Length: 182
Image 1 (tube, rainbow, N blue to C red):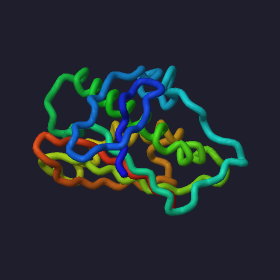
Image 2: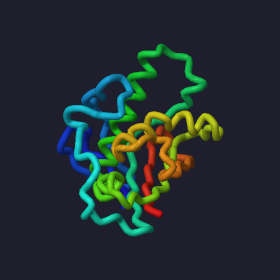
Image 3: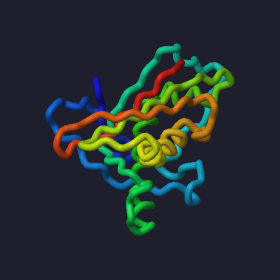
């Protein structure tokens, strides 16, 4: 079953996505501290790490969620830097909140001594396909948000990042995030 965030305000809940309905619009969220710092502030701040007694999710544990985000080819866009920054900030925050809300057991164990390996698959749903290098670039802010939620660097060797895309309907744009413990 697919879930979407009801809103991005603190305390929002994941609701089942009903086929044929539009996902809710992506609202604004609190800023990240220090322009790219890996430590979120305010409502985005959450528990870091875990105690040694925390159980590591079993291999094969999968969390899948879909966000109403339109990722675009950043390399080919000719726009003002502030417009790009605003889009990246919104995408990063949406991914951070969604992963923390939907996969708390996976998030909590990333700081444990017996850290699991993860395969993160980011799927772009859109009308037209992007080529492979533009696809990876388009997901940069989403990838950073997921790494923020997990409390680790996005270049960590425990995470295998995979990028996919599939065709959506007319004006259907979304990002599907799949976290799998291996």
